[in-house]
Image 1 (spheres, rainbow, N blue to C red):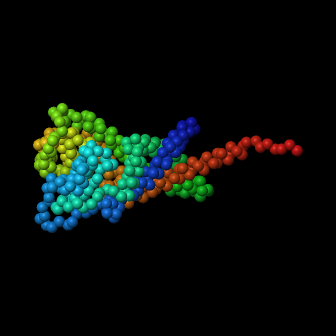
Image 2: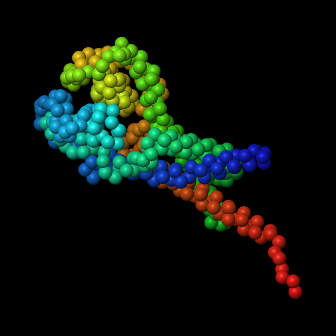
Image 3: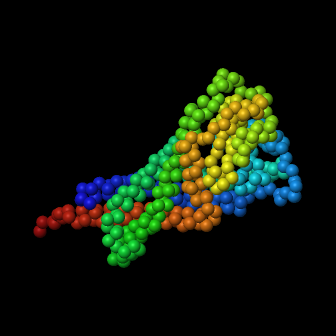
Length: 377
């Protein structure tokens, strides 16, 4: 590589790393407990479990559970009802002060599918704080987009680091750690751990950037595919009386046989129109359980209006979400994800340390070269 090319890549690597360093440390540190958020929530009581059902026990109707949820949170309205794929006997109701209310104002409670009894709140506690810091730093959509930009700089730093240091490190045997000085030792650790984590960092960085665009993608879907699906209802007022949820879900099952309900969005919520229930169906394999198919149903009659597959960009978003937190392979993959996360923290921290040491060294050399004024004798 020519000297000028090396200087350009060095500038790109240095500044893409420095600008994003503090935010990447925030993301790595908050992301570490989030890898185990299911386990932590269960330990702290924010992931309530239903009672063990007796053989042959019949599940209560969803309409009854909906009435129970509204009675438990008087003065509020239902936005969504969802089913945990890992705990199908848990029914989770989302209530808010209005149907299109702020997601941060929503209350999530779990209900027993067999008894309709409330089991407790879902998704609160310390994990919610870590999640908000990790997703948007409590700054809403601007915070998400800002972290997306930091994630993009992280990807630039990785690529530029590979281009810059690969020609030099390939001359050394893999795993070589020189002990000539503390700076050289940290430099070797920085490159070694960077090489070990590079593929993982690219995957997590890319999926993280994709996830920050979730609201943008949802808006695109609503403006195009959803708008086309609800054209026949243009100008019609919202339903005065909602159809039975049990009838609505039964019709959705007929439209998407072999699939299970992931969640139902009530009319007026961000995932549907003002006139429709949207029932999002999922498959039953590790991959298809992440991919959703929306079925729109008339809010007054519960009859199917339309059903279409999601566009490719939303499928990519849904697949990237569990991959970002290592949620595909159970506990073994989570442990691997956590170890790689810790290594990445060391890479980021050592990179910052090396830059500080280099700056001090250059400053010392500059001072040493300055002429000293000797007093006249």
